[in-house]
Amino acid sequence: MLCYVIPFLGLIFFPLSLFIHHSPSKKEIYISSINLASALMGLFFSRNLPFKFCLPFLFSKRVSGNMFPKQLENMMCLVARTGRHLQRYDDHGCRQVVGCIPYRYRRKGTQNKELEVLVISTQNGDGMQFPKGGWETDESMEQAALRETIEEAGVMGNIENKLGKWSYKSKRQDTVHEGYMFSLLVKKQLENWPEKNIRKRRWMSVTEAKEVCPHTWMKEALDVLVSREGDVIN
Image 1 (cartoon, helix red, strand yellow):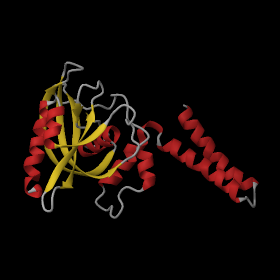
Image 2 (image 1 turned 135 degrees about the horizontal axis):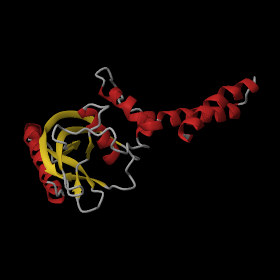
Image 3 (image 1 turned 90 degrees about the horizontal axis):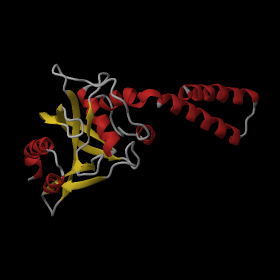
Image 4 (image 1 turned 30 degrees about the vertical axis):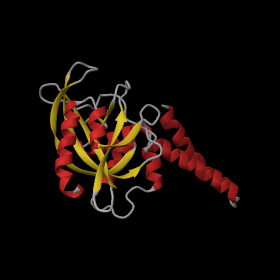
């Protein structure tokens, strides 16, 4: 309840403070502006609103130039979705999961480029994997993939091709999940992101990623990415 009350109080006190001070000083205007900014951010972050409104913007084909202004980065990096009341399941009751393989190219020598992928630590710390999570009913598959990548790995970029669909067994829940993976060409790496305090991230070569990732289905998705990007690398 407070997450809604406090922002509205800020919206009320901002114009009231300017009304009381007909000729406000620079300091008073600055303080009032901070109150307004806090109020707007409070409303923005209430009940997962950043992903509901920002992700359609990121996928808009009309966006050009700097797709990720600093203000947007700051908003996106502070909150992660929680709960499974919006979780999607297939006709057989399998939880539907989507994720990304974030990648970039690193110059190797004078001509060739080496493909690097970003991996993150698992929640229980028993290995590294690619960012993934539940696909929810209020978002497209691509939006869910980008959201999970921002939350867990703290990177933004261009969602490209679907790498495939896999059925795998969750070790934590002992249930079968339906997993979809996309390739994501990284454009921005955030300094702060929702799961920064619970996950580590690291850029690796394809060979290194296969060695540290315990999930067969993710390794197969990586093979698909490598086969598609082979012409670009060589």
